[in-house]
Image 1 (cartoon, rainbow, N blue to C red):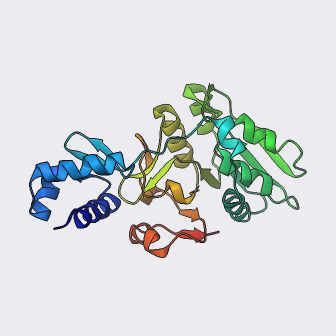
Image 2: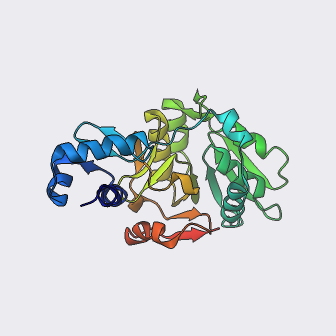
Image 3: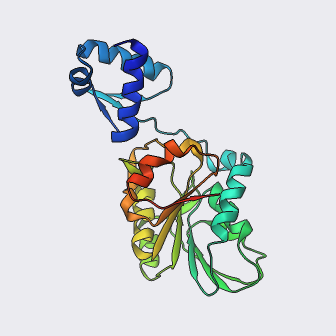
Length: 251
């Protein structure tokens, strides 16, 4: 098997299973483990995967801090935010997670009927300062500055008292096998708790977040109601998510 063929096989296994075990790949491709390890080293150097003991994992997206991310808001995020805002109905209680994509939801929320927005992000609450019909509930707690959201026991207790109709969950990575993940353990716990308190949970995912995995799992794909993605993402890329039973909405 040619080097290019081996690497393509490795990438396919990584996309499908969320991990590559060197010994298993060597048996599958009928080559030595040293050959597989060399391929993995080269692919890691090319920025295609992350080497771990015994194999490899998908890349974990490296995000700049919140202020830098906010300055990089794109037309794609605006499309996703507008689509998600259109899912909100009169009288609903909506929980908005932190993040620049969810800020676009806040900016596009309907202004012609009343509803309630709950958030543990002061920046999201600030986006809604002049919204004419939204009632805003801001959850407090220990501020995780990287994402500008409240975490910890105080936030957890306050969230437990609310039953949102819909939660727009922010993530750093989505993978068909490894589910939804982020980079901080406490933030992952808060996100998971909000989802468990909510009737429906949706994720807005830009293309670079797909087929990736961050260190801290939030939820498996089966625990959410659907995912909103850019309309130009190739169908072959979305197929593993559809096969996992996830509803996909194209914006």
